[in-house]
Amino acid sequence: MQSKVEALIAPVEPTTRAAEVQAHEDEGTRALVLRARAGDRHAFALLVRKYDRRALTTAWRILGNREDAFDATQEAFVRLFRFLDRIDDSRDVGAWIYRIVVNACYDLLKARKRTDDLRVQVERIGPGEEPAVDEALDHRREGERVLAAIAQLPLKERTALVLRDLEGLPTAEVAKILQSSEVTVRSQICAARAKLRAIRACAATGDKGTP
Amino acid sequence: MKCRDVARRLPLFAGEDLSPAEMAIVRGHLQRCVECDALAREGANDRRWLVEGGGASMEADIDPVLLTRLQVGVLDRLPEPDHSTRWSARFRRIFGPWDGPRRALLGGTAIAGAVLVALLHANVPMTDDFTVAREEPAPARRALPEPAVVVPAEPAVVPAIQDQDRGNRDWRVHWTSELHEDGASAADRRAAVARRRPISIASGDPSVRIIWLAQNEQPEGPL
Image 1 (cartoon, rainbow over the protein chains, first blue to last red):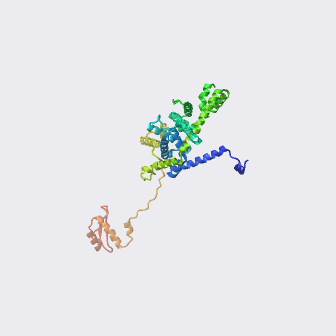
Image 2: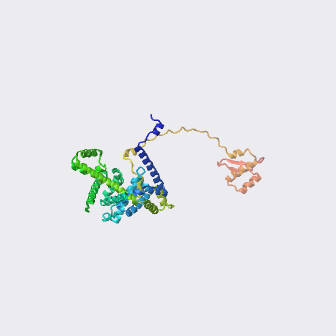
Image 3: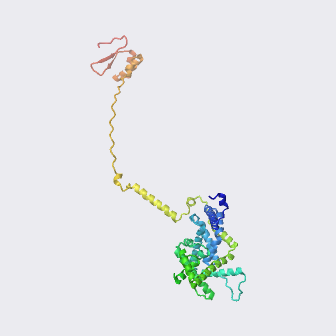
């Protein structure tokens, strides 16, 4: 039988350690939620600080521009505060925040009725401009092209693709966030990847047509 | 699996979103088919472009200043804490917001309670087994009466007889009461007592006449 000392000095599997860290983080997040639910605004501020970057990037990828993403993220966190008592303690708080952010983005698009006219902030490179030498700048421009390509996808497919590929969530979690079935989400992701590939091919050949 | 079926699954294969069995089948096909393998490589390249490029564009634009603006904006927009002492505010603090599920729960409870009270008030039997509920109770056995106990009564003692053993004053009192029954006035009684004259007292029987005489006194006339 393994003694306690041997158990302490035994090497820990990386997956086990990651799971422990994740469990510790989840416990801390749950404690923050409970404190915020009891009216502790400082705890809620910590909660906002923990998820603000993730929420803002998700909203940005769905909406296509920074200003709308900023408004939608603010609205999402205000909704989170209002409905803190509805959060299921057994579920991941991050999934709740994703869901609220997605709903806030949809509501913003409905309110502004700009679903088909997204303002994508893509920095155009002029015809006579020298290609970027700086690798970081090159990466940034490539990212903006990705964002512009994503913005051409239908809203549902875009949301599923953002959550699955860019946020790295499993398909089952995406289905829960979107309140849909896994089969539907898989189909949306498949269609989005195929369209994205067509968009990229069109961009490479200089064709401006829609996929 | 044919190339057409594999090509349809390649977008999901790139993200490993297929089931393990399908992944194995597609991998096996790609090892045999060069064209499908080339398509799969392009799909993997596209996904890499999407993942790496999609993350790169945000990092430079989401700076700490923007996040601080976001946090301050959120905290400014939060509703003020409700310290009201009104009953509605207390209810909200204890039970949470008055939303749909809570309304439905309370409404259902109220309706069920009203139905229960109505049923009880209407005296409707709550069970289908009506005969069991209405079964007459067995008649109780009648108890025999207790045997009578005769208690011998004490002999009646008339206070007036007892008073005879006392002094003259008690006799006068007794006389006074008898005279009152005979119909003599109070003045006559007092005079008779003072003179100690013989007094006739009605006995109730017309053939019997009771005459009281004072000590050493002879009756006047025939008895």
